[in-house]
Amino acid sequence: MREGSRTDVESAEADRGGRPASTSARALAAAAQRLFLRDGFDQTSVEDIAAAVGVSRRTFFRYFATKADVVWVESDAELAHFRRMLADAPVSSEPARVVADAFISAIDHGRDEDEWARQRAHLIVYAPAVQAQASVVFRRWRMAIAEFVGQRTGDRADGAHPVAFAHAAMAASTAGHELWLADPERDLGECLRTAFDLILPRVGRPDTDV
Image (tube, rainbow, N blue to C red):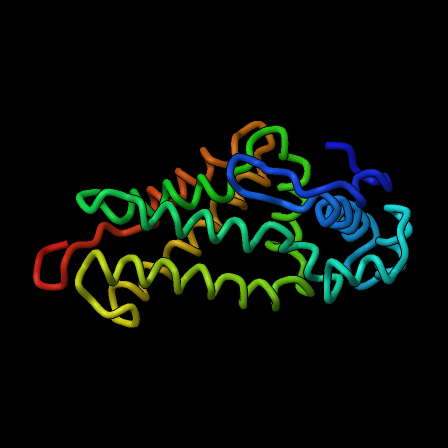
């Protein structure tokens, strides 16, 4: 994907493996993430981001309410993809495997997207100014996971098993991303799988052994 040109900003939405993404928003997000990593999140202004892509400040705000929002440009599409995979999984499938498979499918955009994905992961894991917003996004993922586990175990979504499992899944995601950032030779999916296998518990119905 070409980045940093007016053509990107004005192009139509592109479809990426069933997860639609606005190319214009992605161009702004990619430029912003580079500036955040080079100059710091607090030191980078909306004007800096807009100028890097060759658009106006007003154009930036047509796509994002704040500069922190650029980090989450794919989040809604990823979560929707994740929810679809959970809903479509066979009832007989073990919940931990379903969640891991769905998470990796939603988050891992492939080697062609490594640069963008590593920039995003670095900001989410290590940038304090981004982490406050991350807690809001992660809560949405935890709710989706808890609802799924609750349905599969016959428990309430706010029951002990679903809530603990959902928190464990998000912790595994963070661990997997840290492993990936530490070793550029590994695939994101591989690192996530390792973390999920180590952290996610196997769950059963509340009245059965786990």
